[in-house]
Image (tube, rainbow, N blue to C red; front, side):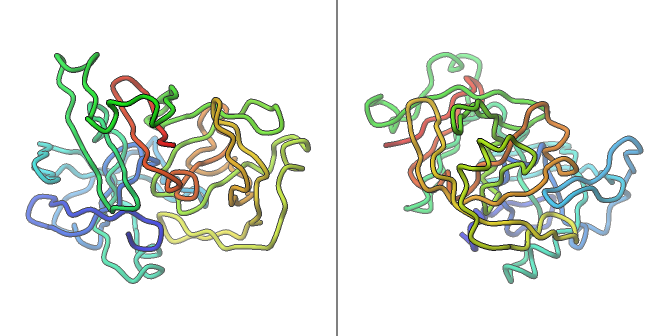
Length: 270
């Protein structure tokens, strides 16, 4: 952990170092500072998007191999995004972001207290039956379905009896909520101050910080959740249909959490 970011060691071709585990990124992202020997191709129909808004056109490269432990990805396409703002804030060299597409056939368990990630590739024979031994006792956790929209995890929740959809992003150091939501939702938040948000890229924005009285996820009632209020219209989540906010570290790190991307299930341990 660096701040509230999960760093794991991986290698892109011959360049090895720290990558951020980022379920809020659709796919692999590389920091161009460390990958200058490639010829990028500009995606004319895509612009860089982050939590702080829109940037320039997306440039893409293809690397021969991405290695993450025993996992190997051949001919992996990656978007180039300047990560210097995050590096400067955290004082650490970050080669890139490991996005959701890399784990679409996996089960991922994150144990924040032990600083451990359990990663298992689910083959076709295991698709309906596989579960880690930690999931052998259903009374230890609650299970909920999530959707995958535009390569992002979307979880159904409720605030003040209003049904809302939140993106689950393990690289979000803060929970976020859209300031354009109805008053009855905003009235559930006690504002305590202002904060500057920095995302991938070089931009930053100022937003309000506060505490959400209660967030309902299935039968679980999560109280006094730290949250930041900002307009998400022009962010990386603004293009998602009905994405009302983001659930990050302050939501996920409360317990052990598991994701089965094949079954599209999230398991929140009690």
